[in-house]
Amino acid sequence: MDDDLENRARPSVDPDVSRNLGLGSGARVRQWALRAAGVVALAALVAVGVVVWQRASTPAPIQYRQAAVSVGDIHAVIDATGTVEPVRTVQVGPDVSGRIVAVHADYNDAVTAGQLLVEIDPLPFRARRAEARARLTAARAGARQAEATLADARRTGARYEALAGTGAIADRELDSARTAVEQAEAAVQNARAQIAIAQAALESAETDLERTSVRSPVDGVVLQRQAEPGQAVAATFQPPILFVIADDLGRMELRLAVDEADIGRVAEGQTARFTVDAYPTRTFEAAVRSVRNAPSTVQGVVTYEVVLDVDNPDRVLRPGMTASARVEVAQATGVTRVPNAALRFAPPGHTAEGTQVWVQRDGGPVAIPVERGLDDGTQTEVRGELSTSDQVLVDVVRPEE
Image (cartoon, rainbow, N blue to C red):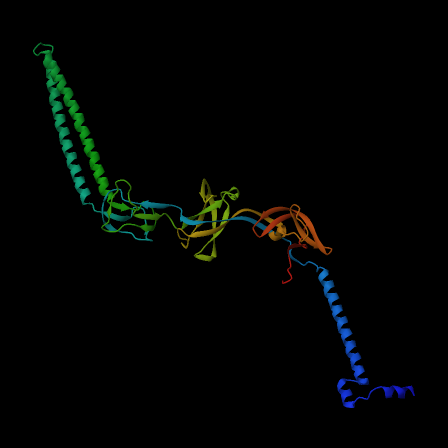
């Protein structure tokens, strides 16, 4: 009866309207299903947020890049730059002034000692030689005349000396005869001096004539030529340089500018390797011959010149080439080596104390004290409690790596 009263009290709804509004038992089921799905989605979002928060608040373990400890040789070197030059160059110029009439050598010509390079017009010098010869002939004639006068004065003086004791001549005449002998002797000496002067003038003229032929003083190769036919040269104050000749291009020298911080480790006899831009894939060898004491200061940087001997049998090295060299100043064989980066590295949160390297043991970095030895720029000799089975830490692996 109560159900009948409830049904009579509930207003009647059109079935179509009820279906459109989602009323009825099926609608209630769908509503509960939607509510349950929303709760599950909310719970899932909360769970994901918790996981993300936990991961963000918990730091990831640090990953390290490692390198092996090795045993081998260390060659300590210093780097320097310089130029390749001939061992000796000779500048050739004229000793006399005149006009060039012929040139007999050119660039890169091989010349020998005494070979004719340049001819200067010899005509003026031949005239001077002829004049000097004439002066010498006149001086010799004057000397013979002076000698004849001396002989006559001596004969006269001898007669006067013989008559002096007899009273046949006065003392004044005897004195005059003696004076005439002395004057004749002086005239002979002067004439002989004039011969020597004329002889020297002739030799000078002949020398000047010979010097009109400019010859090579050494065996070598012509590097520079500044002589042209018809060119006038004046050797009065500073003779012009007509040729520059390299003594021997089969042996060269490397002149390095070594920084003052490294010069104390360079010594004669050390070896070096160098390259030049003309042959970037080829390495040349050299040996230190001399360490110069004279400093060179450029913009506050002090360097010293180090000279090295270089063999150049195939003549590929040319004067003036720029070289990049590495001089070996020390070496050690069969030593324990680590990369230089290992000596500079310290794990995050740790500080370096003294000289040490780091290895990973028991899940964390451990410092190993070491003593440094030679350094070749890439690896360093170390002495300490390390073995070839150890891996030293050199860097931290970044997340993007």
